[in-house]
Image 1 (spheres, helix red, strand yellow):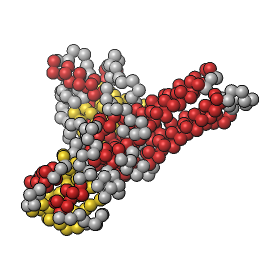
Image 2: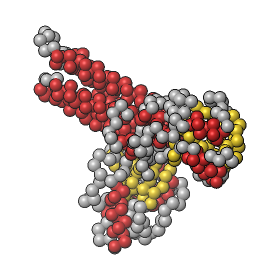
Image 3: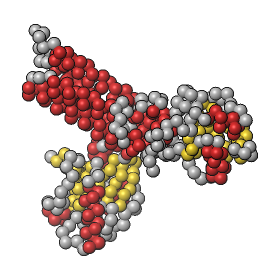
Length: 453
């Protein structure tokens, strides 16, 4: 599925705004310049703006299809910024299809996924981060994620991005003024005020990235991949964390041959646990495919739990030559302490190690706390907003340009390189809210939305 055709922004579009299937009520949404004419044809007359009216819904031939509630929103005071008509009728798929066909016969076309939200963005009713928050709100996996998505929809994330962009603009003005007036006695490129501005921008970048990463974990879930040797207890660990027998557990090494995924809720954080085949040398052909998939899962991990069999000594540890993804937090989990007598919880002197027993549950409170901390979820509060991977990528690129400019100023003392990097940083930040939009960005974003949103 793709987003709306770029050459048809002025068509009138129609789509159900409720899921397919049988229900008490279904909502059909129509948006575009032909809405007044379509509304009069289907309803007899248009209801008063933003006032619910009971009407009969007729097709293009004037035949009655259904009766229900009609709501009319004239432009620009609607979700899309265009004239919008919503028909709330009986929730049968045949009725909904007949109403959509009637609108199409009267001049509308079927909406593409996300086209209503895309029009809201193009017409200035929402910025890009707010539009994406609509999809995040619909797909929320927890109450905290829903509240965070609503804060993004209300503009909290966008305001934080815009505030940082304003700081960058002020810094650029300072630097470019120093470049334009080099004859001034004061060296503006080495004064304390510039240093303070640069320091404040760096702190703002770090704070925004931290909040965005926590918001991404709320929106997308936090993927934790469990790896280790065969029979270390990976499936038992997953079952204990999930609170159910999601994975088959036996004493036979190599029972898990494929990747098994289970989603759990840790204090409002949606965690996707990924159980993988045991890593070892000389596996059979089927097990080798499971190991390949385990390594593939590692590439998309947000965190890795390396499970070790504490009762097996050095032989229970991860194979020393097994590569782990760079830049991803890794926690060593020493399992089977019920056989060794080791104390549960954090391992003394090793901040990235936790001792547990998947059999008894000892140490799992510490492991859960560690997972929440890795996701940056421990400090999630009422100021948290949802974010996406592309937001973090854009902010990270902006920070990298800023850092490169700061380093260039320290190396050379010249402001031209700093000014150019600040401009690039400002443009990268603009991608978050849609102030700057690469050609293919809108199509990729809105193609992920539901039809009718």
